[in-house]
Image 1: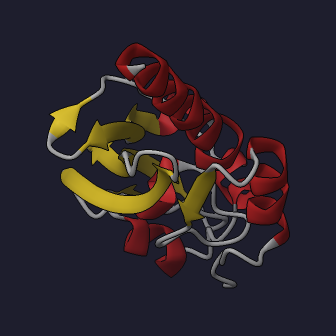
Image 2: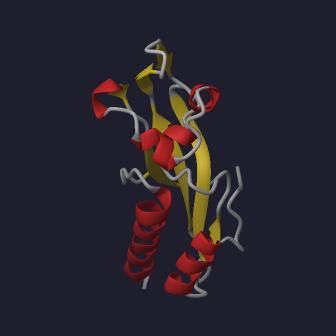
Length: 149
């Protein structure tokens, strides 16, 4: 799978929209894997990416939090418990499109993306880091900037 970089189309488009006041570190992001399930390493807290306000240096880190439990039924009608992103890859679930084919009723627990400013939990849950996470983080950084002016 192709890792996202600052030169990736998805990141360039965000930076074009956000302007030069922000820097995005795509961290562990991979193309066509925007769902937190692809970053879940068991129950816990895994760094995924970050965005920095270049005017004051504030950085919001985006983590995958929570636990994943999927009761996956394959084409042979065998059932497997998927708890870790590696389990997805073991069953050729490699993209958001592949993941979307799993019946929602087979999800017992799902991970999410959440945001932190240093160790401070910002309580900003989202499920797509590109479409939701970075824009929400930018807005939070703008709010912090205006409250300090």
